[in-house]
Length: 310
Ligand SMILES: NC(=O)c1ccc[n+]([C@@H]2O[C@H](COP(=O)([O-])OP(=O)(O)OC[C@H]3O[C@@H](n4cnc5c(N)ncnc54)[C@H](OP(=O)(O)O)[C@@H]3O)[C@@H](O)[C@H]2O)c1
Image 1: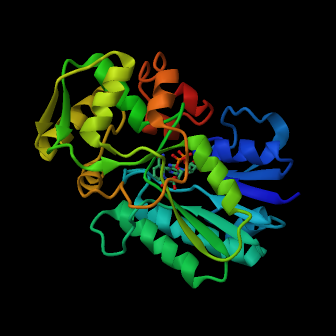
Image 2 (image 1 turned 180 degrees about the horizontal axis):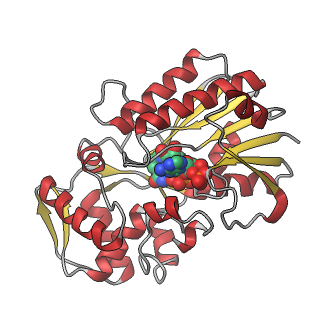
């Protein structure tokens, strides 16, 4: 059985990936900023901190690993973290993997990355894809549009807003599309890609394509909170999201995320890589979906609690 290093195994997608690997009898190590976060693994996973400040220590943490599955990234620029730092750190991680002789890298990117993009998320991800292409590391690049599952933020917080607000605003016409994949289908894909050979790129999308407006309508129907959905100017939507963000002490939605959605960047013409339908999953989880707000910033501040509690 192989030794895997999975980044962020006490976080969201990394947890599902690590779970699958342990079930299959592999040894799993994790690199994380949250070594003491509550997790379901007990002592079965050795947790080491990301040592981006020390290339030797970073390489030592990867020593003996057949595969690195890399989920590390930051969602938006903030006073404590930035996309440019995430790019810099990821490049260090790839160098360390090469130094340590890791056999394969499964790297998580985003749909439609581009170095020409004005959006740092999509530009940074494209820069990292190029770094892998230019390296000697055999790799698979997975490009999800958005993940859904119990610890999810976007779908959960749409439901949270529908439960609390009398009306839901979508930016512009709301006709831009989104192809969510179930987090455990995504984990299965990451594990199966770890066994492939050669260099591969896979759009990690689920079986359903929604317009953003359609997704909100569908979630509203499923949780029994159908609301009038109104089109608003993106700047106004961002303003309202900022006000709500202040109330919940989080960044609800960035202008960049609005722009990425509106540019149809979370949609591809690829075949689905996952089979779980968001609508089925949402029906099964209708009672809990959106019952609590999921906070990105709380996940960064409260490093002992599990994502499900935040
Ligand atoms: N979630 C989605 O809907 C979605 C959609 C498209 C693409 N993706 C991509 O999928 C990958 C995994 O996403 P995920 O939602 O599963 O992520 P996650 O578990 O929340 O985080 C993955 C890793 O990045 C670290 N990290 C996240 N934000 C950070 C910050 N602000 N500062 C420092 N470290 C940070 C985490 O830290 P800890 O070690 O402390 O846990 C963890 O090691 C990412 O590369 C993301 O770009 C996700």
